[in-house]
Length: 224
Image (tube, rainbow, N blue to C red; front, side):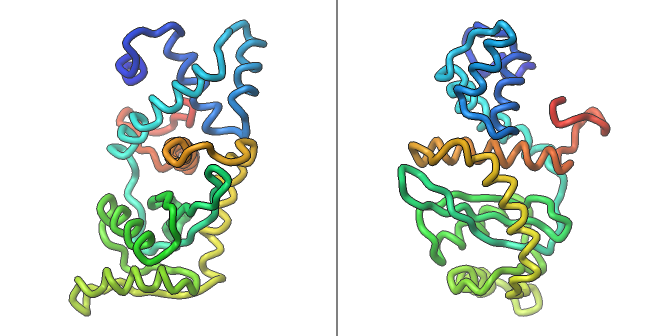
């Protein structure tokens, strides 16, 4: 596992053990102490602070590698935001999926306003190109962000905006997979840690949905 070997100057544990711990933590509703106990039962003594260091160090590298092989998404997006608690205060996780439920992109922000929504859309467009249609709820902030984007486009190339609570059920249901994983955390202690961990959880969620196009072919499991 070259990525793991290159991430640390010296490895005190086998690379496959590090990979397994990071995947389990991102994939399942476990606390770091839960994972520490699970590894101890297998005869592997690793402190929860070491587990946390592995996650924080590897998630950005894994995310960068994943982006290079992410399958293209559709051009009809469903966008919504959900609440995430950081240091006792609510922050906002903007997310979008396409019409097939594939994750388009995500962004954690401190505010829920037109500027935050615009940042999210620009990030998603930078990675995936402009959508043809975006379905949102009746949020004025999201509507304003899309209107800003459309001012830069000719009328025939403007993004079609639909406001439908029913059609947005797809992304709202997808939120649940993320919220279920973070429930044991009981709130993040810092915004940066929240960004890192959410990126890792979203990464595993996308792999489970088959959004990773492995360069060596199909048929590989999320663990592989």
